[in-house]
Image (tube, rainbow, N blue to C red):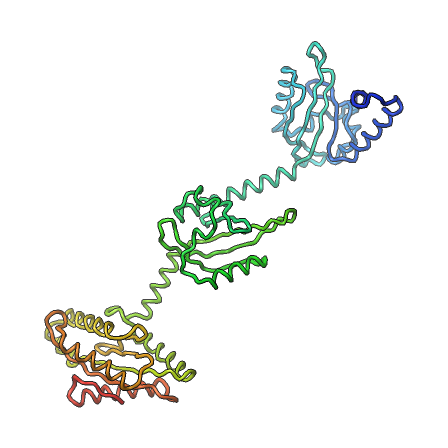
Length: 435
């Protein structure tokens, strides 16, 4: 049957060929088929579809042609059991409908029982009565293609199900893919993101140098990881732990960037809150003693390095115990908070104030001489004396001032300002003294 088919094909397509030429071309085509990956077969239409020809490259599945020509095996016997009925039914329906060409995708079993996916192209030749004369089939092993396709589908499904946000951009930063998590978190529609530049998430919380480093890294083919502040559609900010991976197509040279990010906004805000709690006085919401101590160390180091002066002012409420004993601790707490507000309003942004303990406060006055620091302290003392605290109560404060001079250490400076405060109290309170 095969030789008949080949001769018929050549005769119909090469009219000027001699009988000898036809025989040569049959041999040539046969050799080409034998070395190709596509198996060619011809069979007798029956329940089992007995093959009367199969090309020698059937060996790629572990079989030899004689296994089929001797009727030891049939076409249907190597079809995977779960697919067999569907395949045979489709062939029978094609015969009934006199369909001349059709294709099937199914699985076969190799001789060692491995499963392979086969793309089959079938040709049926009918006579004028509608009876099948010849039945040919080509078997093309596409297992690798199917498996890769399945892997892609599995990956796509995983990307859609993951809680992490994923998006892909082209070399120019145009978004070509987004998963559902990114849509949920950002508030954008998929149609609003696809085709837009990745800068759609830009928050303006990072400077140009930040983004320059990002692009320099990924353009060089390196992975990039950092925490980035992005902006949602509703203009609110969110923090993401970003991983960007450059992907280069080895065939076209096209470069894409796969970005995965995890929303860590809650974590960042919790860390910020914990950090604030660690350095903030819970009652007055100004710096606590730990933070002021830390800032004094930094200012000392800066002065030693660059000669920038700074001063300390230590403030204590006069007879504060009487307020607590007479009016209660609630009133005392309100007085402390009102006092803090007055101090904050009368110092610069570069200065800082902290609760040193109880009714004592420490002011760190940046880039000031002793004279300038005394002026600020006297101004604050006067305003406090004239202001009703908690809406009803007059208080006064005593303030000690001292300027840092090299090569003093922190302990020496604190002792100096403490001595100045002691002097202000000893001299009658409600005054400023310096040391």
